[in-house]
Image (cartoon, rainbow, N blue to C red):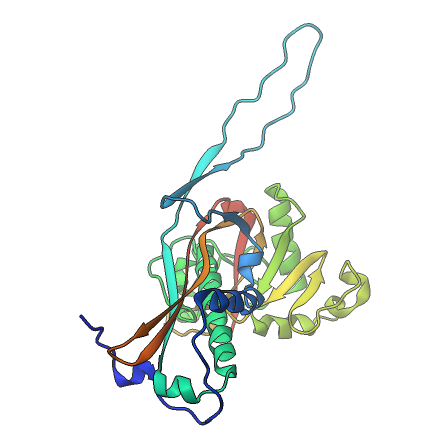
Length: 325
């Protein structure tokens, strides 16, 4: 039975009469989408990643290590064994996402060869954005919905988030007559969040601030964060991507969720102080391409897809914070 595609689903016309784009085997399409997929990932490269490729099953049990203690030793009595109290974190591999285009043979014959690159670049970006988005949503402590990438997140979902100005006041979407109490990052707020992680014995390595573009603007207005003496590695925030705040890298991404206040206004955004051990990404199938010719439509269907799962492992290793949009 034929699939009920509509006219708008097809790429049916071109503006070039160059050489035929040709039929490309799936392996080539798969290889070419990897570069833009990796280039557009942000959070996926900042969390713990487990390679489950080629394995069967829909669940992975990950040991979550709990720190032991050092005990005093006196003469003659036996040593004090630590009690094994590690737990297992269950990660469901339940996310199967795809990106598909349909190209009529008429368009395929007349299109320039660069058409292939346009599709692979867009597919890589879209899939990377979706994987990152699913990781961003782990920052919610009380999720109620699953918005699509770029969608608005209910403010109450971030029940344990703090505001950027002091790093300790709990975010409230109903504060200030339902306008919310979001506040931009300050030096004091940054230091307070870092202290919270220190108090929870979170390792100082592999921490990172993930902020929306609006907060880059705020940080650039704080002189000490653009002065060489205060950024740890001697590198100020630049190019909107990477810098150092007290030896903690800063990553800017437009994928930070928009957060609704009590009046349903999406004029807040969620950022993160994240340690690598907070979340896990389990990849069961890397980005794979499938190419099929649909004779009933005289069209080629190109699909890229991937299978993975995400899960929070250590809640104390991440601090979500809410700032104005």
